[in-house]
Length: 236
Image (tube, rainbow, N blue to C red; front, side, top):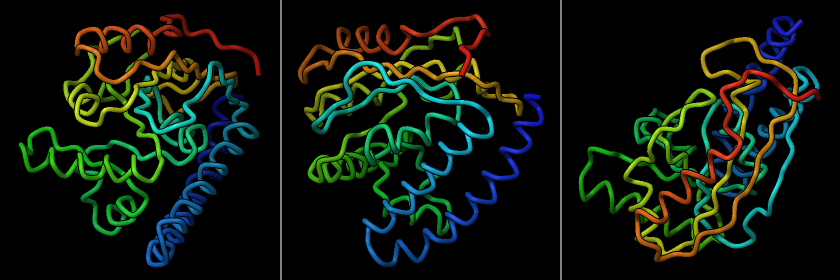
């Protein structure tokens, strides 16, 4: 049954994604607001497909930031990369520069307000990243970042990437950790998804100006509070 659900999800979601991409190009010519509208609509469609077809729903715990903040998110699946658009109210998203350089799509992504990061780009790349991050802060948007750098399986707790602490130090924004357990239902290397509830838990905000080691230790602990090596899932 889970295989059938997963096939139906692919048949509905990916053609819908293609339509959203096509609509995003003319929207980007109009305004950033138009791009945000298309992006939110696509994220709502993803949420609908996940809930109705797959039986995957979310449960929010804790308090999400009401002012601009750096939201440090545990990363276990594709699910949260789309869901966070709705949960965080159109955040600016830190992502690899290679994705931002994809022809046409990269231009649309920049219009949305992504923050490209180039780990090998040196000082010039850092300045570009900070310029985009400052612009997001001035617009009143939070900044979403996956500080582990890549998707990890449940039970894996890798160290945080060094660029995360640099962003924290230079922006002067609080950090809000966001733990989740999507990998139990939406494995990173499996086509088959399982029904259940994905919990997203906001941790206590950390103020700007903390020593790097103290901040990273607190974030690492907070984003892993829901982590488990067990494959079991809650019932939807």
